[in-house]
Amino acid sequence: MELRDLGGALGRHKLVVLLILVIAGLAVVVGLRLAPKTYTSTAIVSADPDPTAGAAIDDVDTLRATLAELAGSRSVVADVQGELDVVRGAEALGDDIRAEWVRGTTLIRITAEDRDPQVAADVANAVARVLPRQDASQAFDLSVEDPAEPAGTYTSPDRWLVLGAGAALAVLLAAAGALWRERRAGTVEDAATVEQATAAPLLAHLAPPRDHTTLPALSPGTQAAGVFRQLRLALETDSAGSPVGRVVVAGVTSQDVNVWLGANLAIALAGSGRRVLLVDGRLGERFGRPGPEEPDTPGLHGVLTGTPLSDALSPGPVAGLTVLPAGAWDIESAQSLVTTRFASAMAAAQERFDVVVVLGAPLDVCDDARVMAMDGGALLLVVPEGHLSPGALRAHAARVRSVGARLIGTVLVSRRPERVAD
Image 1 (spheres, rainbow, N blue to C red):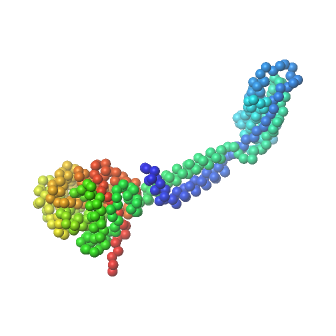
Image 2: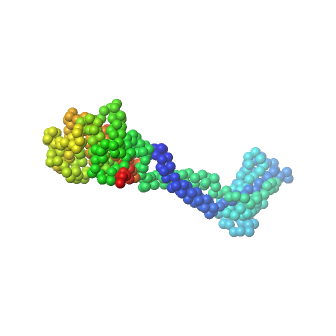
Image 3: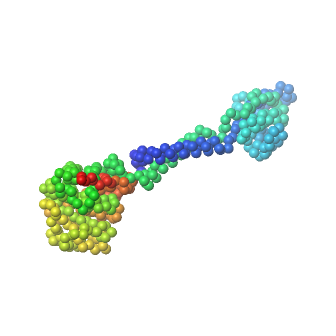
């Protein structure tokens, strides 16, 4: 998925994104508030050489570092346990005590951690009091420079780290939620989404008739007639640099409106003075049955099995339009015939006609329409509003191009039928 697709999904489902961000944010805050806290306190001890020591000290700094290491020893921990007002286990207490010599100084820094800030301070101060008794060398005059105070805030968990990680996780969850919503409920609703998903121009946005068996493009002056004239002009303009003699009209879903649109497009092209052949390419039961009132001709199936084209044609409902019905198809051989013989049959048809318009099977049923648009043809994609996600539409467009077919454009069909005046 491209970044622009993610941005579009976030914008279309901003309420879902906002809800996830709020819930995730509250979860992080509540979790941080309820999580066990650790407080840290520090006491500073000064380890100055004792002037009353009997022997000279060769390496004072090494002795300071060694003294600091004793802070977590068993003997120190045992003495500290005796000075505390609360009970702490020796092993846990030893793990919570750390001391280090501050290089370049006479200071030893003692830190202690505990779930109680007061206990942490008491432990650090107890270590500072006990440590002089552990100085076997008796080489230092140890004094507390800075006693430990109860911490005002916890040191673990790291609030900024938790908040940063929580924010990043919230953003990821919001993006995932938007994409999930896009796949589950997000559908193509407007022209911009169609063009973005298909990377092809939107040639028309029209409302289907209430009765798909009507041919409103036959009626000059009607709104539908004007739409189909605009669609014809758009096709001619788009293909001016690369003329298309065969246009396959196919929907992404099984709807009668696909056939209605293809038939009316053929009528609109014939009305411009062109010789147009309308081919019903829906061969086989699972691809959509031919119309119930087909002429008694061999049809497309007969042409693909050897019947001369002229014997399979029927006159259309308007001047300049000829029809090649599907014919008496054989369900077992239909798909192989389309793959092996359709292109040559259409090449012969294009020698006799200016434009061949093919009614293809829906893309969600089979690959026939894609195959029919190969070898010099082009596919006009019919997209109904509210029926599929942008991702699914993008996949259909990619599959069309993957076989070398040209996607000449799309038609967006409104979910609401056209209004008919009383």
